[in-house]
Image (cartoon, rainbow, N blue to C red; front, side, top):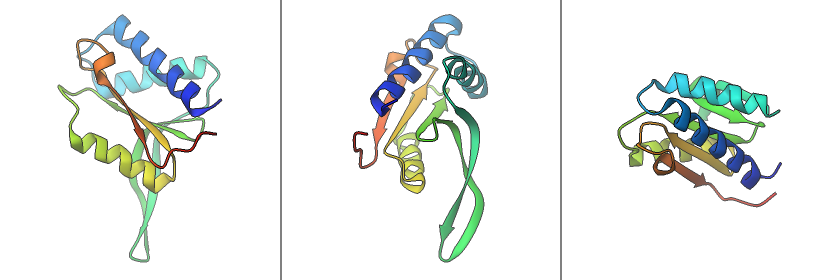
Length: 128
């Protein structure tokens, strides 16, 4: 499955979840439900993936955690905040760089509609 198709599937499920249960829940709820829906569609989903970082010649185990890693290549960060900030985008871009992945999704479930809470982030994107 190509990145565009994979992203579209994740976004489709996120919109469906938002329509069904709406805003106002914890991020962990949206993360769990989204993971379950994607697994139900036959996708490989990992939750809270611990990632280590090499800095200054030292390895820091589990320096950060990715909310969802879909098919070992699409990073999804789930938020439930009033409004996405530049810090959220920078967080995802950092994850993309450190994981050497080209595309990620930042999904905020707290808006009136899901459409306003979707940001697709690209890090040296190359179509597969």
